[in-house]
Image (cartoon, rainbow, N blue to C red; front, side):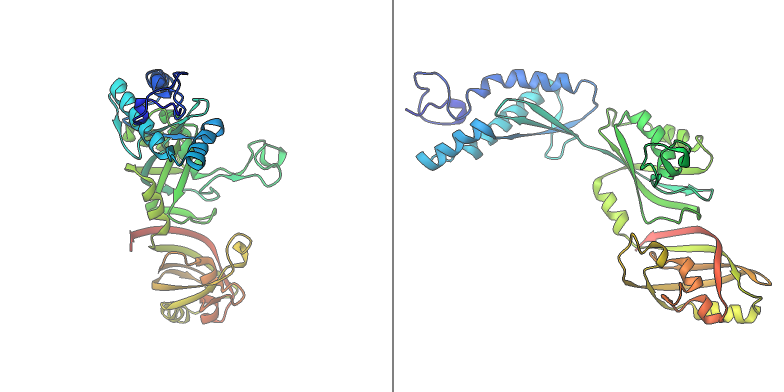
Length: 363
């Protein structure tokens, strides 16, 4: 006789062994499992939770036997019933809210009743300014030691200090997280500054024990840290905001100090800058082709302005579509960018210093 329990929602009664072949009387241990969950999560702040369960091993074998040999398909019902009762008990004991995408996901292995936890990250939206050059946006490990530390990197494990390093250090402290990542809307070159209104970013804190902190206090800690980076934290975000800022197109304004191979007439320079306000066809620059797909990008320059001109040097502003490589727009990159300032003037030139001075709202 097939032995099943009432909790499994079957009409037949438990057989002589008194043990349900569907759930092995796991429902009798829900109180114990819920208590263990709350004990394990004692150090974690969370307002909501979700539950899940998985079948494997002998528990899975029983389900397969019932389905293939006896035509009883109980896996879905068993798991659904268990999840419902388990969630109800956790909610009852903790007062927390059940949500499909809760702060914490509790997963029970119905083979051995092991419990795993998925602590959802915390996301914060903000903007950062980078006031110095030779500061990477994200962690840049030393190419010699791969982050272990060596003489080449002064045993830091890093080729460059990064904006990410400066922001996540105090963030990990206040959120008590295991790790953190900076997701930026594009990135400036390591030798370029990010000024003006700052670059949009989302900070992701992994496995945080604290979920709600004073963002103004965190902002203060970051800004008082190095002096190289200034942030404005604008509020809590979600994973969808990471996707949004990475896919959005932000028009940008740049300021560049350009050096020409020889002196350039100011009228010639102004004419070339006027002609540069057009559609640009730009093949992946040689300096980044090892980490970017080799393709031709079609971008637009919206505006240009000559701010200063002295002999073979000039300071110019360029307002362009996001994703346009400004250094190559100036130099031409051996013909890979067309048109370029060098091509229009007929004189080789390069960007000596570059700043991002404004990032407009996404389009």
